[in-house]
Length: 461
Image (tube, rainbow, N blue to C red):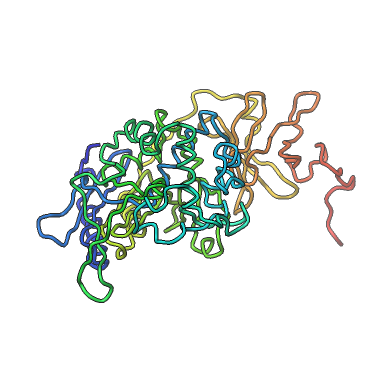
């Protein structure tokens, strides 16, 4: 991927550099590297370091921790798209004898499987994976802490199980499958299970003094699908483009969009913070925009990949310290800086090349009871229906090819909309999941359930 640094204005580039400089300085990170993607290309990279003349570039590996989970989720979604499993399948159907087989694959992806957050002691992130050679060692004697499917409880062992599922169905190691099915097709040559030079060393920074302690770098073994990977800001920038747009060699745009759709009931504090979780993707509402991606941490390293689809922007931030700079907030700020300084220029408006007149006649104002709604024809041939003003139930619909439409999102997702016509061919009303929409409030000439009082509308004298 090219890095046309001059695509951003000088003031924007300085603001981006200032943000990561403050993060590295105040967060006391030995080094920090960042990248910004716009329009499918890396348009800015920056780095700060405590060592003069040795700032990392986009080719230096850092450990990315739980961003690994998104890679594992992509592998699982590929299995689903190939018909080898269904997301509602219980794990036991494909991987028996784990003790966690009651949870479905979707629940494991969304961290709603009820499993514990961590594997049994000793602390898995700072000890060799050889201490946990089997899934039973990862899950422990009591895998479930919560009822399956009832709450979002982040689970590292859950992704270890998903990695084992990939191995079972592919007949190869998790890392080999990842290399052949995701890393190689996307050109992520600097993403690997073990560090490859040049790579950063992981450090702990003393909380009360400016001194360092090296962190151990362990092979996580069975826990690898939850956090093993090393990568670079350059590779993660490419991965961000894939997560934003899809790539049919790996996963379709529809499937990656499904991954970033909230799938887990948020905890109250998550709801207050505007955050949720999809299928291997974190979702957050911040600064008035919807952000998707994932964060990661392992002893010695912090990482964040953040995407704003509406702005066609993404940011990657990597640091080599156990704690310090708030990398997810920094990545969100990098997106915001570019979005506000250089807002996306929309494509020119163009009229439709053709229009179905039977659909065109449905556009305009409709009433559900006394509430006014507007039906609009969209550029992609679908329609949208929502309140004429203010908030309320609104949805987009795709045409089914038989004169009906299916809801894509919002309250009416999955619901069927059809135009009910009179014997003379005129539209009587719209039927949407049994709700009736008519051209006038309780139209006397339309088939309104319950009928309309024959005396009509009246005042009270």
